[in-house]
Amino acid sequence: MNQELFTAVDQYIDALFAPEDEALTATVRSLEAEGIPQISVSPNQGQMLHLFALQCKAEKILEIGTLGGYSTIWLARALPRHGRLITLEIDPKHAEVARQNIANAGIGEKVDIRVGNALDLLQQLEAEGAGPFDLVFIDADKPPYAEYFESALRLSRPGALIIADNVVREGQVIDPDNPDERVIGVRRFNKMLAENPRVCATIIQTVGAKGYDGMALAYVKP
Ligand SMILES: C[S@@+](CC[C@H](N)C(=O)[O-])C[C@H]1O[C@@H](n2cnc3c(N)ncnc32)[C@H](O)[C@@H]1O
Image (cartoon, rainbow, N blue to C red):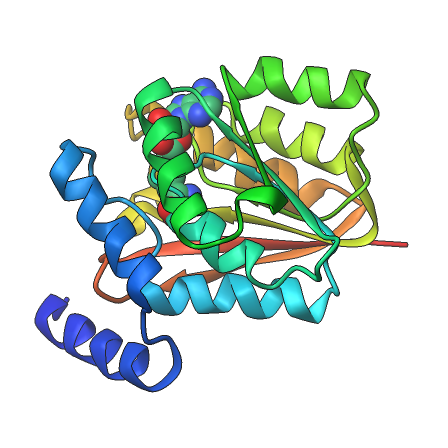
């Protein structure tokens, strides 16, 4: 792998298609300042999420895994004035940093950050009838990805798009004997996704500044 080249090409694409404004650069800086891992999506992945949200005319978006709100900002900026995004985060410190970053981006009134374990919060969302969502972005801990997807599917409208990040894991995903619980979780999710007749799905391999990984895309059949 040529990580240097992937990073340089990512920077080239970012400069053309996904230049960060002050709110996004401040979000990246806030992670560093608070000692939070720099595991947000890259700028052009953020732009890709934004593009998908525009393409499915999303008015309601659900995100699982907020971190500092970087992907949240890219996604929420695709919403119309009355649009809403709910994002789920287990770590109260991440949620607080995200709240500040989202307010700084001027979209605080569109974004509802819920703090807790995503499995519990998803159950609550289903119970309160919070759906249907037009787009769901899954980007939290990997072992329960299959459960996140099943809940996302119940919360999605026909024609919705469900996206899940980090499903290739530098190619480790092809090893059935890999003992890493994240790889096991992602392999279980990928297989379940492939076999689910309610969606038309695939996985796109991704390379760039964030290394070698992949995103799963699932269209919820009408
Ligand atoms: C990869 S980061 C999310 C990055 C973010 N989507 C972005 O691109 O800016 C994963 C986040 O999921 C959170 N998380 C991990 N396990 C979780 C769980 N069980 N429920 C909710 N959030 C969880 C982590 O605390 C972390 O902030």
